[in-house]
Length: 265
Ligand SMILES: NC(=O)c1ccc[n+]([C@@H]2O[C@H](COP(=O)([O-])OP(=O)(O)OC[C@H]3O[C@@H](n4cnc5c(N)ncnc54)[C@H](OP(=O)(O)O)[C@@H]3O)[C@@H](O)[C@H]2O)c1
Image (cartoon, helix red, strand yellow):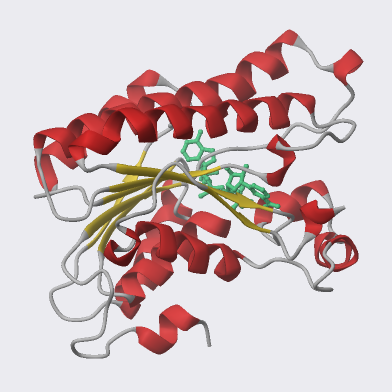
């Protein structure tokens, strides 16, 4: 049983009771685990992703965890382009009374050598990981500015690959390094408005994406992490909950590494 399942349905419990959280890429992997953890803490949650069937299924699982009066919404949208991002934020502005938490989790990897990366691959990953996250976080910050609330937090899912250097990671690690800088400057600019901006950097986490790159991701993760086990989406959800909950009101511009020690070597 995950922490989210343990906490769900407990009357009065809930670090995020009554808050509204939006999680992009919330149908699978790390995004779903974050959405699940937030629901377990009493949040109303909107998830967005492209595949409507997977999104509906994920929203159904979240509804089963939610307590009375908690709202779960889903919106199919491609957040790698302007049209999908506009559709998401039109929906948020129209349907949600407030936006307390925005988790920019959408992203993917291309793992091949610098000399072989094509223009098309480069443009695609920059457009989704970097430009898409810039547009989403800017739109979220504008909405938060216009609708003040006690807890307003933006979280960007980065990666430990943004630090150090490993072969065959150039397009991915470059976009994630850009996101780390986006987080720092945005945190500085938005602090006077009371809006916090932080990053979470996972190591290898066993998700559909990781498994599509390497079916032995769990075994590899255990080898890479000094803590001797692979990272799970629920590990990332605990970090996300810390950064986004009101008790972290003095935390902004930070980058929380959750990697079992993988980046220590
Ligand atoms: N897994 C790891 O080892 C690892 C390590 C470090 C960092 N991360 C980062 O963590 C984040 C989540 O990764 P994950 O491993 O959980 O990935 P995942 O298993 O592939 O899940 C990605 C989620 O994002 C959605 N998505 C992908 N592209 C989208 C788009 N253009 N528009 C809207 N939704 C989109 C997917 O649904 P649809 O496909 O239906 O759209 C899915 O819900 C990424 O930013 C990744 O870079 C992952």
